Amino acid sequence: MPVPVISVQALSKRYRRYRRRHQSLKEIVANRSRGEWEDFWALREVSFEVPKGQFLGVIGHNGSGKSTLLKVLTGILRPNRGRVEITGRVSSLLELGAGFQSEYTGRENVYLYGTLLGLRRREVQRHYDSIVEFCGLGDFMDTAVKNYSSGMYVRLGFAVAVHLDPEILLIDEVLGAGDAQFMNKARTRIADLMSRASLLVLASHSTEIVRQFCNKAMLLHSGRIEEFGDVDTTLAAYERWVAAR
Image 1 (spheres, helix red, strand yellow):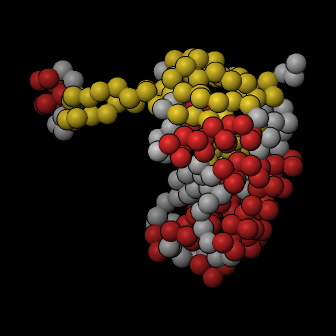
Image 2 (tube, rainbow, N blue to C red):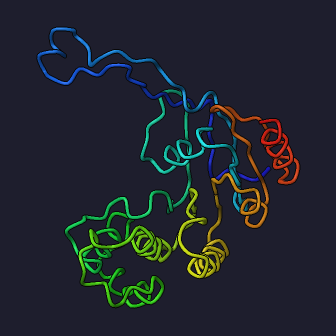
């Protein structure tokens, strides 16, 4: 059996849904709590392994736990229960431009975002011209990003993120962002990254994208694994669920 690059055992992640949140320190002290809430388990007892060379598509409806799973794998979130073991350098395309500072120019944010994604300054410098060419924002690189449209914002974030050299690549719903021309170029770049990565985990609610990029698939529903394995079998189970709704 191949050695797993990602091993997830009995993973559970809980959020709090506040019905009423105490706003002041006085309220918190007086009531000895931050408010009234109920627990919401975004992931429940999730276990799976991904070996080198496998491209895993995680499919499911909005709120099924896909994004939470990738954030746990990336290290953005810590699980409440269970264990996650990852061997290799992880690069992620999750919330594009999440580290941008609105008052900074596009040029300044390229260096900032690149650092947040694990690149050294000289590596960002080496890739800078290619990043600008890829996103097509050469005339706006010295403009504050607060003046960018949402499409320009995503294009800049994507351009920086795809200039990494990953061993493990995690992608969350970014292949459907942006205009058609840019996304055709983005998909070509993703395919190139995949050819150099040893493993891919891609979360999407698009069966077309999972079928195009992945050789294994996982169906999540309400934080639990409903199906895992063959792509066509798993996507058929998802399509039956969609049809039933």
